[in-house]
Length: 361
Image 1 (cartoon, helix red, strand yellow):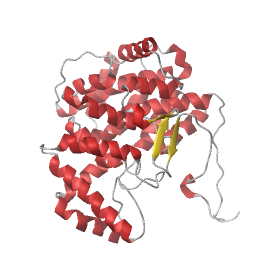
Image 2: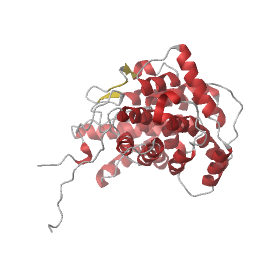
Image 3: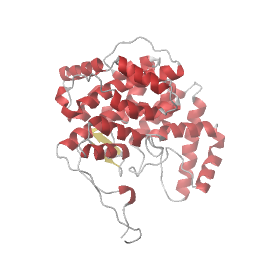
Image 4: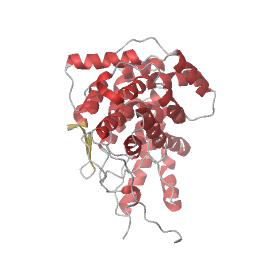
């Protein structure tokens, strides 16, 4: 009997948080399609994912005020970030460390029970990432007060407010995605009854991987390495000949186009037009086109996923490539917390079996 390596296609639990319909290229959170959700404020989507209910205006405002009140870094938080900034650590490794540090003086999220400390992390992580970026790259924040966490983040990294819509849509599209590798990791840790911040730390560790969230950084670096659209075909052919992955192409869950990629590709194209990012966007599109052509020759269909074009949006707001996945984590944290809350309702320790193939005693 062949084992389902990677647990592909194996249902290990139930969830009501999101539905990934890979056969038809659809994605919904709590029964609401992403085509609708991208028109909502980010905080409304986050609240829906966390609680399963669409907040009325008063509830949404109260939630936004709680996030905003918890968002500023404490003196202890700033000292932690300053220390991390001096270390040769990837920003995602800093997020792993910060997940336990950012729970000092937790915010007011009493209705969320055990997840309250995790919401303090979710509220504070954007400020921590922005401060890390300031310490390492000398970015200059601009003054801007808002209940919108994405608007505050863009102000904190000195990004133009005109990019808020594109950035918000991108964050909404990656807020949740069912039992992906990092979310499942969070649920495994949660099943041990470990604290919520431990589950977040483990999730960030998984998200860092190039085959998961780290594909966003890898895809843009690939475009920079290829350099121009006219080199895309030879690059793809070389990758196929050597078995090298083209990062950001294909997705295990989707048999058709990743529905999130359609939005991000369009946003990236609009942002890149008539800017220095235009050549990078054109190179990415040429890589996708060449890869698709080669796959069709083999009778296969593999499309660009969310990560492939996301780097254009993130570059436009001023994020260095190594900070891409950390910005991804800012949004996905709300999804992790939704799964933490869901798992606590009927907890069972996740402890799979393994088929032993070693030397018999």
